[in-house]
Amino acid sequence: MTVQRLIAIYILICTAIIIYSIFTIPYFRGINRPDSFYKRRFYSRLMSEFHKDHISITYKYFLMLKLVRLKYVSAFDEFLKIQCKEDRNATEKYMRNISSLLVSVTLSAIQKNPVLAAFFPYLIYKNGFYRENTPGNVIHMLRRLLSEKDYYIRENAVTAVFSFRKPALVEQAALILNESDSFIPANFLQDLRDFKGNKEEMYNRLLSVHSSFMPAMQKTIIDSVRESDIDYRKEIFDIFRIPGINEAVAASCLQYFEAHKYEKALLVIVSYASSLDTKHIELASAASATLGMYPCRLTTQILFNNLSNKNGYIAYNSVVSLLKQGFTYIDFTKYIDGPDKGLSNMILQCLSAEDNNYKRGN
Image 1 (cartoon, rainbow, N blue to C red):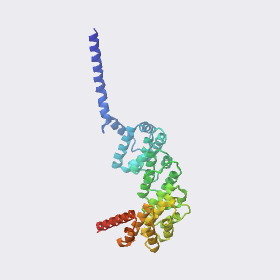
Image 2 (cartoon, helix red, strand yellow):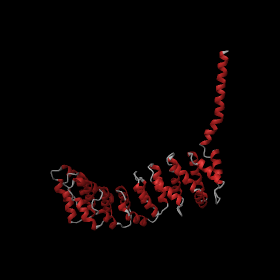
Image 3 (cartoon, rainbow, N blue to C red):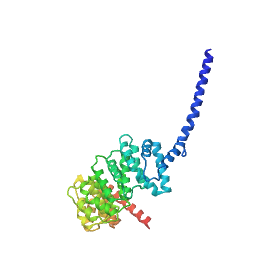
C-alpha cells in the first residue's frame, strides 16, 4: 500500500511539472520575442490614438500604468523609433499631446525609480523632440532633473537641454548645475563642444555670467571656449588677470593662451612662469609650456632659467617650449655636458622626440 501511494505521488508531481511547463515556457519565450503578443497588443493600443488631435483620459491612464514597467518603457522606445521613421511630423505631434503625462511619470519616478526618471530626457535628445516651441512643462521638468544627484538623470537632462539648440536654456542649465551641491556631468563639456545652435551666442551668455560660477564650471567653460574658432581672447584675459583667481581656472586660461596667442597676456604668463612660489608649481609648469608660443628675448631667458628648476615638469615644459621657439642641440650643449645628468638625459630625449616628429612630418 505504501509503495502504491509513493508511485501515485510521483505521478502527480510529474503531471504538475508537465502542466506547469506547458503553460509557462511559451510565456517566457514570448516575453523576449520582438513580435511577442504583449508588444503587438501594446503597439496596437498605442496606435489607437496616435493620430488624434486630443488624447483621451483612458488612453493617458493606460500609458501611465504601462510606463512604470521597464519592459513597456523599452517597447515604447522601439515604438517611437519606428514611428519617427514612418511619419516624423505625426510623432512630434503625438509627443506634444502626451508631454504632460510623460512629465508627470518622470517626476513621480525620481525617488522610486531613477532609471525611469532618466528615460524621458533620453527620449528627447535621442529623437530630437520638442526642438521647436519647447513646451514649458518639459523645460520645468528638465530644470528639476538637473538638480538631482543621480548621475544618469543629470547626464540625460543636460544632453536633452542641449538638444533644443537654445543658448538661453544652456545658460540656465549651467547656472542650475553650478548651484547644486553635486557634480558637473562629464558630458557637459562635450555637449558644449558639440552644440548645434548659435554657439557664439551661447558662449557670450556663459562668459557674461562667468563670475557667478564656481571654479569647476568656470574651468569647464574655458576649456570648451579654447576649442572654439571664435575669438574670445579679451574675455579670457579679463578672467585671467583677476586677483586671486582659482589655480585650476588660471591653468585653463594658460592653456587657452597657448592655443590662441595673445600678446597682451604675455606679462601675466611670464609672472607665473618665473614665479618661485612653491605653492604655484603647477601654474609655473603650465606657463612654461605656454611660453613656447611667445618667442622673444624675455621668454627665452625665463625658459633657460627654468631648465635648472628642481621641479621636473617645469624643466621639461621649458625644454619643449624652447624647441618650439626654434632652439636646437647646439643651444643646449651647456646643459647636456653639464653635471646634472637627469637634465641632460631629459633634453636628449626631447631632442630625439622632436627629431622623430620632424621626420614623420616630412
